[in-house]
Length: 121
Image (cartoon, rainbow, N blue to C red):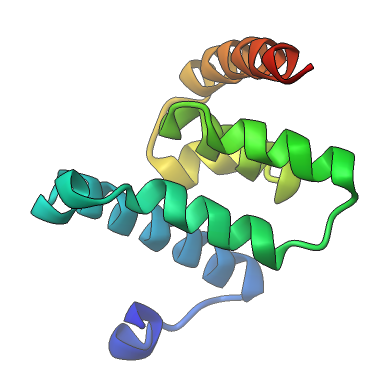
């Protein structure tokens, strides 16, 4: 919706994709801070909707579900890096974070994901 409202001019599709992802992340953060966050878990609903729209083999689906059970900062990073194919440097630009911070966070996220997958069997 914001894409059509703002009508930004992008150099190429990669810039547009990065803008859309950043806008979605910011919107999710805004929702989490809002009153509605206390009434329903929008993050889980959005993750479930995404899972339903993604056509993946059963094992991939289980991994993706495990990712979305992680804290949002870890889940976003894993998704952007492994599913969208962004480098740490590109994610640093999108998320306005230091690349070395994200490398550390990615390591921690992978550790948490291993533990989460271990719970599932």
